[in-house]
Length: 336
Image (tube, rainbow, N blue to C red; front, side):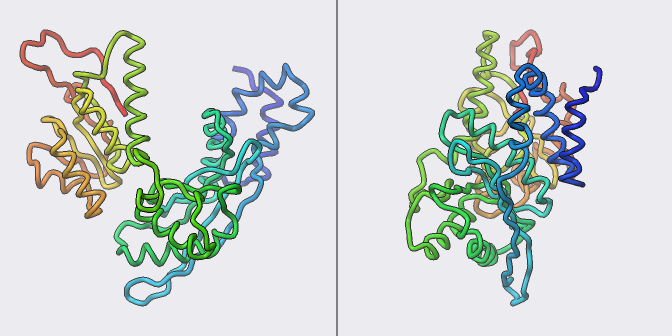
């Protein structure tokens, strides 16, 4: 395919303004490649510099988070809030706590969040935030002190009509509760400024399950288009967090056989399937004890743990299970 000089000129300018932000650059290029033919046909978009405006955040807030660990040591992390675009509504997007969080990652996520939110038909803009803080291995009190310290600065920049954070990787109901509790204390108000709260704090029913269930409903609808169903399919799931747990739950209820789950340490392969009882053990392991997925194998020795690998490393034929009296191997493998 011949290079589009307008696309390359646009990307040259974007890279010059955002050097070394490879994740953000890649996300923008993928969108720009799709949009450039439309822009060629509608010169008013080029005249108004719509693409340039869509790829420049409204503002980026960068701040220090100082907190104390359980040994009394002072710890320092960096946090960001990228308020990307509020053309159709207040900024809306998650907060991510993970050592790999950088400004480039958050700009890439905030940029895509803008389009994703617009597709809902709701008046929501796009934003993203986070910190290079790792909640894994931290006590509840350490996570609480970090979240409270972070909110001391963040609360100046958010609000129900301004910017509405949510959860993301490393930010579950526990972290959201600590963040919202501190926001409520600092603002002296109980408003819907943060989503993903527990029911006791005014959260929504089924909010916890919604994303994982939605993933499986989407898969089921795809199967329905080819006159099939997820029932009876063998499903490989990547992850063991909120989305993965409830994707497994819904897939199991719809009659699928889920055989893998994973976390950053590796994945487990359970050829005898992860049923509702075993999933409850995963929920306790990940949501209560905050352990590692490899502990699953200690409880269910028929499964195997694959260190530092992804579920897709399982040979696809080994994922299949041929029920008694079935004459042929299923033709599809669902992967979520």
